[in-house]
Image (tube, rainbow, N blue to C red; front, side):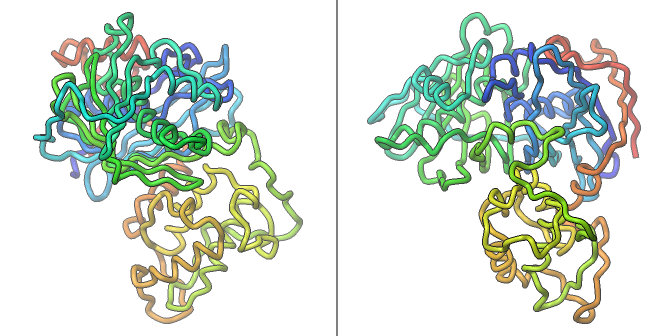
Length: 455
């Protein structure tokens, strides 16, 4: 889509923002992961692209957006045309003392024919063999250092049925007026995910779900309407998978009448291993080895793309570069966390690996293959997906248009420090969008000095 505009918006975010104020993890006010979805949808709507016509893909959360009391965080949401159409969108922030921006989330947005869902959910919900109230779930969350309050605290119950879990959710009466402030209400959105994720752990006696999990990836998101004040969120039991690192599930959203209004193809949540991982600014990876004297591997260096390459060496070099230690010091049999890497490092390393191998990888691949040797062995099984080289041992130049999506983000998002601005038409020209724009501005304090240009 060559006429996709480049646009950007700036926001001032504080801990008093109702989404952060009502969502406190390990004592820190965090933007809920679901908030990135609505934030991007709102920005596209102001550009004239309705939620009905948009699909979000690989909404990947790289680092949490944290605001301390009294702190003003300047956030930027920027969209740039993608070579294959649509946009690559990033959410990044900078605090006054920062020397560089932190990228919090990256999103691929595509225009598509309007979503039309024909599924219906029979309401009232029947057939449950167990009920779990949201009060119980919020109590479980508090025990695991996740506190909800205000706007982010929802009334409701989870129906546990043999084939699915259905969260029946209601906004508290005092927050009914917030429905027009969002395209896809983050409070109802998050409560539905909690109903599926936390409710899953509660099903088994003595199983606490292995601790707290926070959103990592929304593989795809489509919606044909808003959630309103009351909704139902369904998680098919057969779609749920969990290990000691990740939870995966498919999620469906229904309005108060039982009409399907949205779906997530696959939602992935990541286990929180330490509170220090919740804010990456100015902190080295926990347990990282100190940098030794001498030359370190360079993450972006070219490597031979040929059958039989030393994939263990490739992965080890990238990990060593991230840790700033010689490759020989990286134990290929040790877990990444044991080596001193954090979750944000693993997500960035996927992008580096795509650059080195010129192949598209899942953002969660390093969570699935948890050591250097395991990942290299898996990559060997995928060798047919790698481009063939003209001659063994000859480095192959990797063009920007040949790398996977994460590779593009690695170079043009994770390392990008350029700011852009956008012109927003007069609010009155948007008709039905007026209450959305006005209320969103009141919540986010979006700056309006902007202009837009087309390619």
